[in-house]
Image 1 (cartoon, rainbow, N blue to C red):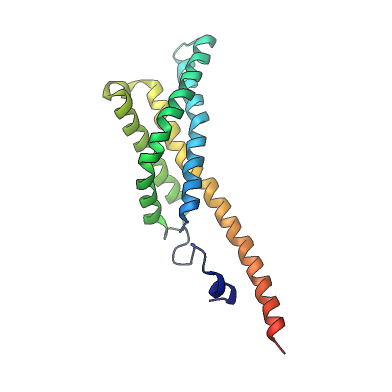
Image 2: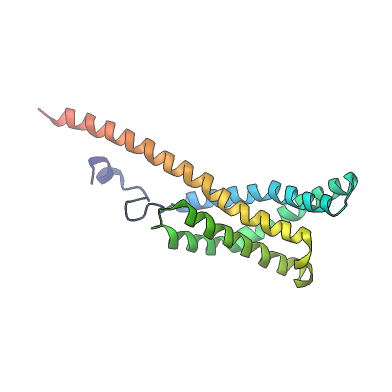
Amino acid sequence: MSTLAARYGSPPRTPERPRGFTLGEFAAGAVRAWVWFQPGAVIAATVVDVMGGGGIIGVVEFGAASVLFGMLIGIPAVILGAPFAYLLGRALQRQRRDVVHLAALAAYGALVGVVTLLETLGPAQLSEPSTVAYVLAAAAALPAGWWRTSRAALRADRRRQQSDRAAEAAIETETTP
């Protein structure tokens, strides 16, 4: 253990847990996923509406409804789904390969999308193209939120390691007679 790590504690990521993230990093990823879901849902639902023959007025109305629906339903979905996402992240913290994280989070996002729609709209609506668009948006939003958050955390780790090496070198030169 380095001098600085002994003094200030170790980071959440270690060689044994290369994708161990803090609770704060997890929360940032959850918020990012919710934010990414909003435009994704509007775009996906609008594309489905246009493909279904909706005119420009219908697209605007449908887009506004998508934003309202996505925001109102998305917040409880994030709150209720977050504990399970956290457990999934803990289970994957030893997995170094990003593709495994992305696939697992996409599957979990789709599951959250289906469960949310079942609870809010009922099973009859699951076959509607617009609801499929919401599920796809959720399946894309979770990996996108994780990707952005993990890149930022890993970049901060690299900067911290460079700074630690420089500080350790300075400490060594001060303590060497």
